Length: 457
Image 1 (tube, rainbow, N blue to C red):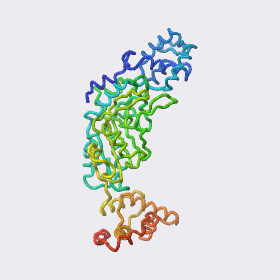
Image 2 (cartoon, helix red, strand yellow):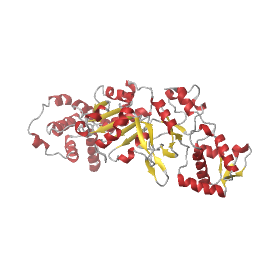
Image 3 (cartoon, one colour):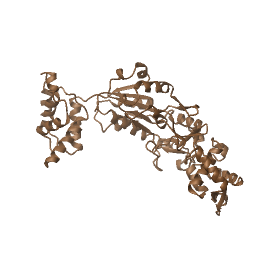
Image 4 (cartoon, helix red, strand yellow):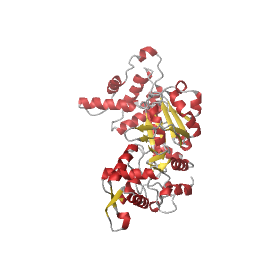
């Protein structure tokens, strides 16, 4: 990353012409704030709009000369301490400003500035190391070296396809990746961007988590040549954790395009734009309200070119970076879900399969420890033999947690100490599973119980 270019881009403008946005956009914001709040001082304008007080003072002086605002209270520190209110002429202009938009907040940055900042902050970002990935996945019981399938995809920062049977931790793995990214280098993002006089709101409080003072990661603070708290940054930009957008079956095509809000007259950024610099997880891929083919047609070019094209209501299009780790998670057959052209554009494919007996044993013990339930090997062997081997039932990583929770509920209902016994295991499985006739359909093929007996001993 070019630190010098980024710091120049984030430097606070001291003159109106350095803002990179039309003067009318700032004036409209001033009118709306005065209309909403009544008398407003320059410090308040500067705080809300993220603009240096000198620019606000200069604008208000011009507006005062045009009899749109008036000084309602003079301070002792010159014009920078003045408080302003609307005149009758200014009130009419304020109503006109609300007709154009109801946005009140930090002044947007130009789409050109946004694009450059995203590209600079996603080039040559700090790579995650094997120990970091292992630590991020440490709360999960996974096959040896599973981290080697995840780490390269995170560092590549492009795309990852998680597939496998349900209940084995695909979503949990993706959430661990999001947490790993969030602990990495923070990223500067604006609240909104502007193009063609229109405002596009990027900031989403559910996605963008501000970095608190004193919590700036070392590899982010090292961007500065001095104390980062003493380096002045354009107030329109804020430091956030790397964003993580997670969607499931509720995803619609509208969420992937600019959405115009007719009341506020502001565009809401699509989900992939909010995820820039971080991760975008599409969980339960294939079960959305849009078909995989529709998503393929929408994203096949951005996945390859790392550029997305959005369109305003006026028909004007804008080009924005498509720079996030896209994670698809599905329990459907990938070959039947999407075609080869789509899969080729996804760099890494990772199967998250069901556990073998050894891993299932480790997971069960871990769950018992988590819920403070005494582990009983005899009951566990009974579970494997009767509920899995003899029935041909496939083990899933989620089963131990769910079975133990049912046992706890039964013991709580009976008013007895929580324990695991073969009888309680069978009762819990009868409540939990629905394939009670599976053994009859599979016949009498039963694997040897030798490994189970060895485990019990």
